[in-house]
Each structure stands twice: as structure tokens, then as C-alpha cells.
Image (cartoon, rainbow, N blue to C red; front, top):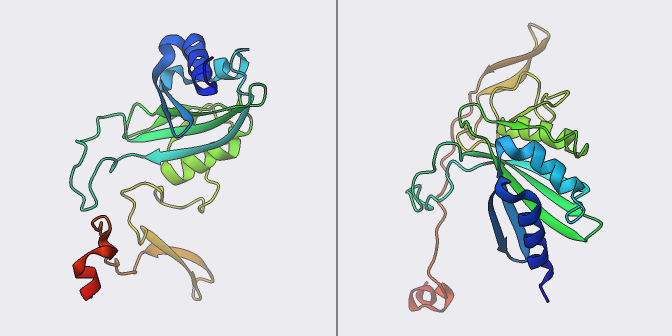
Length: 213
């Protein structure tokens, strides 16, 4: 008898077919990748196909993969990412009918202007999640009825969860007593030096060097 994960993978392959870029299973979780152009049709199939019935979208986030595969010192560990693989929208879906969970990942084709179709028409719960991913990562969700910032100020410059966003920000806001209003000005905070992550050898605490202090 096939396991639950095997049954889910088989159902995904049957229903989505060539819309699937990849299907992976790890840590008892299934992740699929579809192309941005196939997202609207794939989302409808995931929700409506009787063998899938992913009625609920429980989470959505944007991701910046620009440093993915790089070592702790900033050097390349897995090669330079290909164009069109920097920004991704990730959806976590649940099938109440079959008691299944699924991770759906969609990469925006253009790194300079990342666009992914909105899925509000399929899962209305995507509304504020898409606004958050737009605000923090800068992914444009085409077809969203009210795509605007949700966490940062309307005049905020940039997208703070992008890997190249400066830690100190681009501008700062303060109250100007002379103008009697809040103003923006170039940031005056000095950049702080970040201590690089140190990866110690396995069982370091048992080594002679550690015991000597």
C-alpha cells in the first residue's frame, strides 16, 4: 500500500502533469514548483481537482534567493544563481478533504521586476499575504485589487526583506519642530559591523583546545 506522501505525489503528477517543474519530498513534506505563467491554472487545479482539493491557503510569503548557496564568508558554495531564480512566492496549502498539506513555490521570471499572478480569486485569504510580500520583498502580484504597502509607511523607500537592503535603511523619519511636521531625511546612522558567523568543528566542546580555554 502506498504511503500518504506517495499518494499525494501521484495525485499531483496526475492532475498537474507538465505544469510541474519539480516535486520533492523531504522531512515528510511535499514541495512543488510551477512556472509563474502556469500559476493561475495550477492554483485552480489544486483547489478543484477531486483528487487534491486544497481548499485552504494558510500562508504565503516572499523569498529572496540572491545569496542562496553562498558560504558563511560570502563566497560561492553552490554556484551563481541563474537569472529568474532570485524572487519566489511560497504558498502553504491544506486539503481538509484529504488531510494533506503542500508547499507550492513559484519563481518570478524577471529578477529586476518580479511579477507573479495574484491567487485571490482562488484563495481569498491571499489578500493581505500578497500585500506583505509586495511590501517586504517587492514582488508584484498582478491582478491584486488593492496592492499597496501593509507594514511599512506609504512613502517607504525599498523593500526591507531583500538581501541587498541596507541594515540602517535608506532614510530616517523625525519630527521637525520648525516645520511642525514629520519629515524624511537621509539616514545618519553609522553602519554597524556585523560579526561573521563562526562554524565550529563537530564535538568542539570535547576538544583539547576548548578544555584549555
